Amino acid sequence: MPRTHEYLEEVSGIASKLDRRAIDDAIDILYRAWKNDRQVFAIGNGGSASTATHLVCDLNKWVSDAAGRKFRAFSLVDNIPLVSALTNDNGWSDVYYEQLRNFLRKGDVLVAISVHGGSGSDKAGPWSQNLLKAVKYAKDNGGKVIGLSGFDGGMLKTASDACIVVPADSTPHVEGMHLVLTHLICEQLREMVSINAKQPRKTKY
Image (cartoon, rainbow, N blue to C red; front, side, top):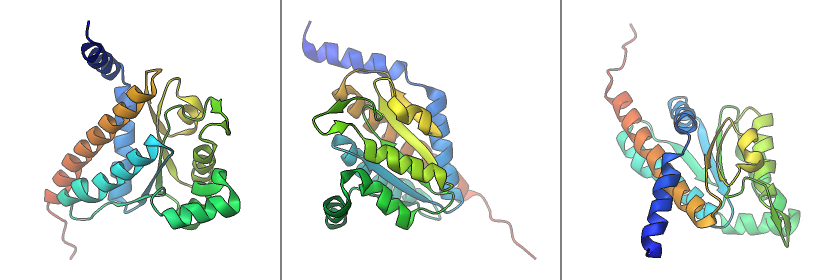
């Protein structure tokens, strides 16, 4: 059997096992953030960093095009001078935490994207500790946290208000499905904010 067919069959199987309730919960948190004019921050390392940037782009452009009021979404991986300065001075473990200390306000949302969710380690030690530190800060300071993870979900699974765990032990499958999920989420949000924008506003007398 060709590997192409096998890979696509695996993708289909993974998609069928996703927790729909967790997806709905994540959408609801983001919708409430938009409705209440809260900020959304996205973070990730490696391939997940690019997913964070992509998500923020879609929230600010694709979703917001359908809304009367736009999303206020920011990727904390994109300011290279700031990221490198914080890493140089304080270490990689504080790179997202330090930014949230400056930007996060009560009711804001943090989207943390990690293949392993903080479990496992490599030459530099445990993975994604900078994400987990940012998640703890957000939770301790009145923020909501959405997690996108894979494998067993890691610590992100229990630390988030809503965590979508991709049930796969494969980094390519997890990262690929995270992109599918962010597009699904944005498609749903676009429809929701579009309906909201079309509703007549109440006039105060």
